[in-house]
Image (tube, rainbow, N blue to C red; front, top):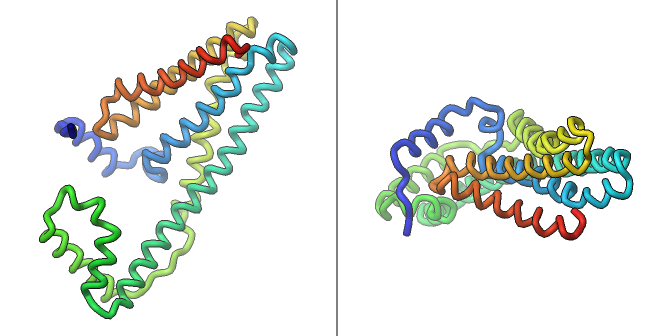
Amino acid sequence: MSRVVDSEQANRIAAAAANPSSLIHRYVDPATSLTEVLCGLITTLTFTLGAGIVIQDEGREGTRQLLIAVLGCNIAWGIIDGFLVFAATVFNRGRLRRLGQSVRRATDQRIGIALVASELDEVLERVTSPAEREELYTRVVANLRASEPQPNPVLKSDVLGAITSFWLVVLATAPAALPFLLFDNLFVALRVSNAILLALLFATGFFWARLTTDNPWRMGFWMLFAGFVMVIVAIPLGG
């Protein structure tokens, strides 16, 4: 059964879209942000789940090497994800420009309308009638045909989006490292680190669910459950 967005949630979503006050909301969409943060958290959790063997065999020096490995891995993934976000943004903008060119070159207006419909129907068909879509697509085609083709340069926002994605992945490592700096007992530090990562998984699911129609608590607990299962499985195996 589909869920109806209440007025408070609708206002929150609209405010977030209309007022991108943070760097994250300004340059990276919520879905990408969620993916980047989860990538950093899960990568870090994967390392720390196997840290028990390292701590037992190599002590504090092994722990230091582990933290360096976690940071290095997340930096590498941050660079890769940042590039992928940059490439996807430029590609999608270029794809829409190509669609505009195809509409301009269409010999029949109906062909142009069909091209626009192929791009927008999936988004609009649940909230508009066929007649409304037909009218909208006709105006879009008319505007495209009356305009000149635009280039697809690299924009400042493209670069800042990539940088934001990079830092989202890398900064997810920092909370997991803090317990190893604060506690002398390495096994206590490991368990605290795991607990922090699980809490962050919950917070990530909770925060981003607030931008959708999903229940934040349910989404948060699903994220927490997934991480908790990884911990439960890893501990008997030496993690």
